Each structure stands twice: as C-alpha cells, then as structure tokens.
Length: 194
Image (tube, rainbow, N blue to C red):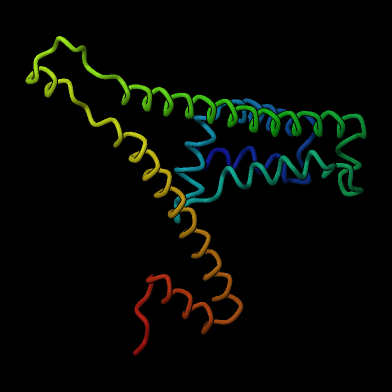
C-alpha cells in the first residue's frame, strides 16, 4: 500500500508535469484517507514508526500543508494550474487536514470512553447473595487492560523515536562520518571501537 501511495499519489502531487485532474484525484484519495482515523493510525504505526519504511503520514501531512498554503500558486506551476484550480486544490487539501484532525479527535474521544467504561467495570461488585467460590470465578483483573494499552502506545512512541534517531545518525554520517559512527554506536546499531 505504501509503495502505491508513494509512487502514484505523492508523485502526482509533487511532479511538475501532472495536470489539474491528476492532482485533484490524488487529493481526493488523501481526503478520504484522512477521514478514517484507523487508516491513519495504521499507516503511522506500520510505516512512520518502522525503521525500514518511508514516513507515509508525515509526508502526506507535509504535502497537504504545502498545497493548502499555495504550493501551486508559484510561477513554475502557472502553465499547468490556473488560479481558480489552485484555489480548488487548496480547499481540498485544507479539507483533508481538517478531516484528519476531526477523525483523530473522534477516535481519541471514543478511546477515552472505552477506558472510562473499563474503569467503571472495575467498580462493579458481585451481588451480596453470591457464594464466596462463585465470587472467585467472576473476578477479573480489569486494571491490566488500560496499562497494557499504555504499554503498547509507549512501544509505538519508542519505535518512532528510534526511527527519528536513526535518521539523525544517517544525516550526521553523511555530514561527517565520525559523528555518524559515534551516534550509531550510542544507539547500539554498531559496536563502539574500544
């Protein structure tokens, strides 16, 4: 999926040769993707947090921001995109960003409601007339559920942080090999020289 988005849709929007209809089609795909929080989160976890993959969500948001700010209003696009078409592209890009934020807000609110309902279940006690052995059978340790979710979110954050640090190390390596090697050693990618 990432290869498809990367080679087709990103190229359509970034290429100087794409016409208005091609750009509009690519933006409409991003508009629909941005309205689904689960798709955005899947892309983020599976691509942006993976050290071997391109940052799909980051690149999409950056590109949508550039278009919403008038990327195609520059002189090099004047032969391909008319001013009215540029306004339409800006509008769709801004709408996609708004959809993204709305979808994430709704997802977060739903997630918080689930956590609250799980916490409410912890407070439920068995009926007074139940036997003690029945009580043991119904005991569920609900306190582990939110903690497990937070651990999973923590792991995602750590993976993203590692990817960013590796990208910094590559940048430093390209700038000055010794600095890059030192940072790779600090990250545990290579063994430090003794």
